[in-house]
Image 1 (tube, rainbow, N blue to C red):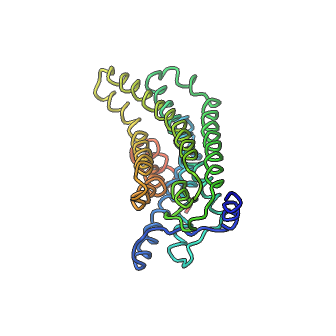
Image 2: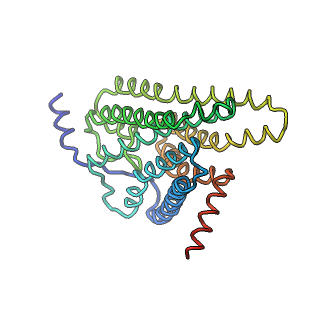
Image 3: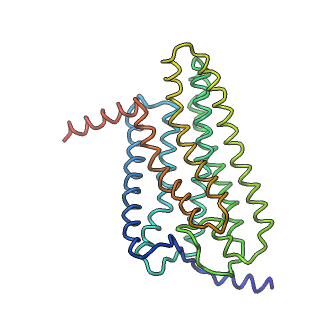
Length: 313
């Protein structure tokens, strides 16, 4: 039996990404929708990185983290969206075994890194509001770099573990992945291996990743709320809360979509696809808008950059 499973797994050279189960005529509409949103993702996140790198006033820890968030959003969506758009026009809708491994690895890397980066951004807001006089001391350039590198390191380790566990399974049921990209749960449905230990390890790994980041975010904001409520003036409280509202919005969208997708029963795969759209398309598109529309410094830097461009032209 073991030899048979090994043989069956070795025969898998590619997978089929089923995508969305809609009528063929709707594929054009979905392609145009994906194209529009992806163009906004490229414009918004590249624009945000350019603004942060070119304006000296944005040379602060908060914008350093925000620039990395834009980088992650850009590449996280780029791992998924172009292939999904190609498959709207493709008859085979296939992806190679190596391509599937790469897609899952990179997606897991960026999504886990984003979770840790959002926790680092919550800590940054905690220091800025609760200890403003010591902000420059606590949030040094070295610490900021360490937090970002640590986020990528945790994302990389998690991605290696998740990808290696997934692709050591035996795939002998089917080659058709009921999703628009390679993800762990749809791949598990194709496996004829015993998934009990795999699911226990995956659940434990998810807990190790999610719980610390959520705890850091919740504790940071408990201290922030406690500090802000002690500010006597309404204007001061409003200004303090406004610096956190954008971050809270991003955290809510990302974690809401992740929990919704992974808590959705396997018998409702279409709901999982809709939830996946939130953090592959919606979140990367909204993040630059949320931070730019609600941030005076970013809007001023953008206006300055546009005036400089118009002067050159």
